[in-house]
Length: 282
View 1 (spheres, rainbow, N blue to C red):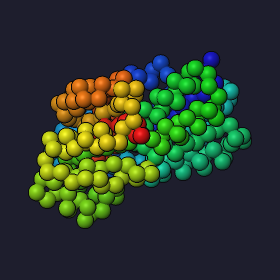
View 2 (tube, one colour):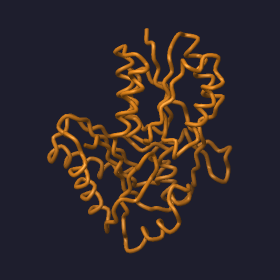
View 3 (tube, helix red, strand yellow):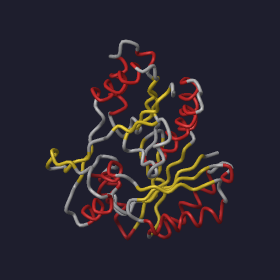
């Protein structure tokens, strides 16, 4: 019987089926229409979801995992003698982290609940969750799992490019000025996550050049790529994802490459066509 459960949220964009054999619980972050919060979009097929976004037929918005949901999860775990370790979306991108802290504080034994700020998103978060879950499966103590997860989170690079900055601007993740400049002359800003927040990194003209630049950044920043698993996530751009995988395997010969879809939560803010790579920096 497992003694530790890794609790994450639906922004983690885990590859399909990977969590069924691992001690992972995914808490749903609601995705709804911005002008109709009661309209749940979570059941939409992912390709249909991005197709509707591209055509301007839906404008999604997301909500945090609330305190009550966390408390229910914690109680269920503790009643079974299981230690929950929350590793969710970066605290700079959601208030779910704060909700988890408040929920922990309201438990009878708060010291038996661990909350980690991943400072990560999408498959970057997913990779941290997977590492922690494998340690839990192998019986490592919760404190050791949390320590390793925090250390790994501090080294995970998120390098990504979006089709349009409008979605990030609308969600408050980038300023209007940054979005305006990025839209000029087919400029594709390459973005990254710094201490849990989204920041511009480079400006490149055209998506093909942006993808090439992402690989160059990877070459500059990565640590022992042949010994690590690299992640790629995409928001309905399988062709670019597969091309990146080929380039990464040929150029860097990593231990493995994981590809996943950018799910509805991250996709609501990044938009269709987004593509990202995740790796451990030196």
